[in-house]
Amino acid sequence: MDRRQFGVMLAVGVGTRKMFAAAVQPEMLQLKRNGWMPNNEVLPVLLYRGAFAATGDVASAMEGAFERHGWPPQWRNGVYDFHHYHSTAHEVLGFAAGWGKIMIGGEGGHAVTVHAGDVAVLPCGTGHCRLDASDDFLVVGAYPEGEHWDICRTAPDAATVERMKSVRFPESDPVTGAGGPLVSAWKV
Image 1 (cartoon, one colour):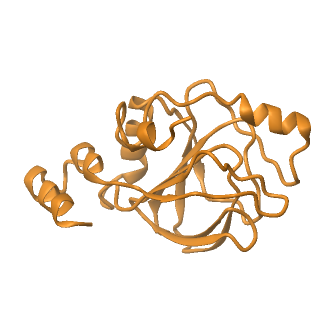
Image 2 (spheres, one colour):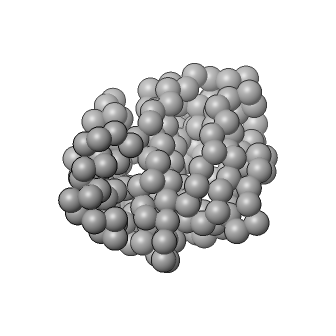
């Protein structure tokens, strides 16, 4: 967190989740194809650290924000412990409790440790897998309106590549809403 973000947090108060989330700028990971994992060479992964206060009912706060911003939540659980990607949807993972070590981009990709309050936005085709996690690790999964996820565990064939190209561009950032970092970072 830089000084400007810290100043915004103090000015609005840590308890003001919506305002605090707006001050958080994501880390970006630009991925390339990695073995059988297609990843997304155009749209970067966005990783928001501390997007939500890690107190109270974090899962419900995340679900409410994602819903307001056009990314209806579809599940609460964890992250699968095998490498996979989604060919039919972009995905937001809200880390609501505990911690986890996630591999982004397929085998030998980027290992990232996430904590309660963090959020990852994965463009379709992005490989991910849980490497380790605390016993209380809880994730909220959400997708842009009208998108439904699949699970792919092999290299994409021609039909899958075409399907991924047709996944529509989200209208807003799941954390901050219209005009948020996703809208400017995911230029196509």
